[in-house]
Length: 292
Image (cartoon, rainbow, N blue to C red; front, side):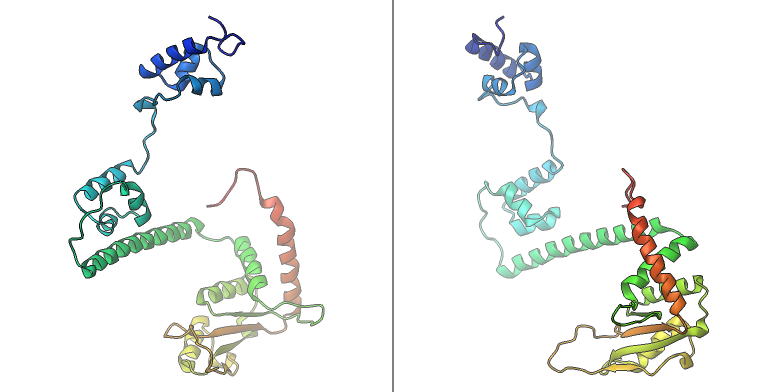
């Protein structure tokens, strides 16, 4: 046989053989090996117009859902009902059935809206379950912390949320402010690890004047397990009537300021430790090692 890609190749003869093989159920790769045609452009020209055999088509994960959606559409179901029944997005349903005839409206707008709400509720519920599953798995993956791990976490936590020294404003003292009770718990555990006595801590509640001030004071005192004598006078933030506050309700407790007395040396050690973390960050990255 003359070489397929040679100057005098018998294209029509090759095409006749390629078409016959295609109709016999051969894949492109099998035709290539049979005819010794290794030029992809030429190979595609030889079988142009001939559909690939069914066995070469890869099934997609949503094929079953797509087929079911089309069946329901042919039964007269609306997009809303199909979406609610299958738990699929509206865009997917639309893509799958858009070539089918539109069913006659058999329900009121109120009924259609109720079905749509049901579909959204199902979708939101599934999303919420997945959200909780991911969070719980991540929480369990952490496990118990070693003292070194807690030390490094605390340094990063303080450098993100704590007071810092500035060249134009010397502030070599340890002060931490946060509204998250969990953040406060981790910070106090870190101070315990560093050997900071609780007697050296002073607390200040900061909260809007029109919130539950007394309730917030009790909340923070119970959380840190400190006597009221360790608390300074609460700082009240004046309410601006022109602004609409979103931090309202029973869960709003303001912020807690935790100051360590005689802490200049401690602050310097924290700052030095932070820059040690910065220098060591690049070396911690290893090829093919990732946390997920």
